[in-house]
Image 1 (tube, one colour):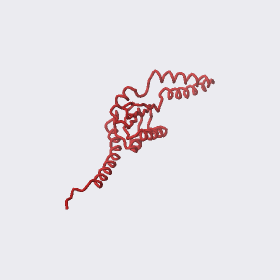
Image 2: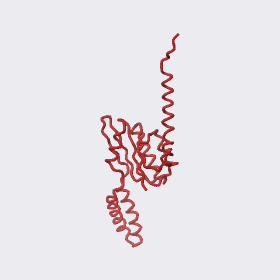
Image 3: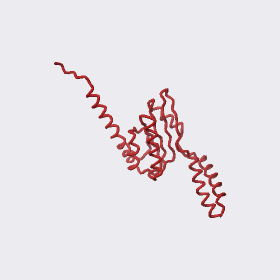
Image 4: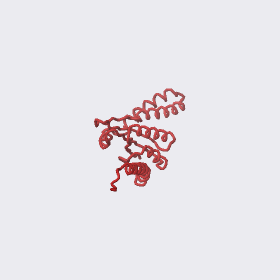
Length: 183
């Protein structure tokens, strides 16, 4: 079953770095990345979407691989590859796997200008390995459809980054605050 995650980062660059880490983890089989979209809110309030994973092209590649296997068995590999790619593309368009742009835009309305969110549709997540990679950018959980215990692992991984950052800035503020002592 697919699960949806949305994590807000302080900058589009931090969101892009997180998206790159998620792609690497997907290659390492620590999660199956169905779709990934970065939504950034411009300073004028406009929401811009960057689709990083194209579900149709993934279906084309999968169909071509399956078609070539069937083609080899029937001694017509090229016909199998072309037919498999065509069927994969058709299947990808019909299934419409992936994130809904309307939902992303509505959810991204909560993001402050200048910030960005990574929206991911995933399967088979090894959250103990994925959560620290998500937390590297110091994000805040915006939306999650994960099961309770898995959601808690992710939330716990994200919180220390924010808490540490807050404590440092609170300490810096107290050092620079004027003293109220009278002599």
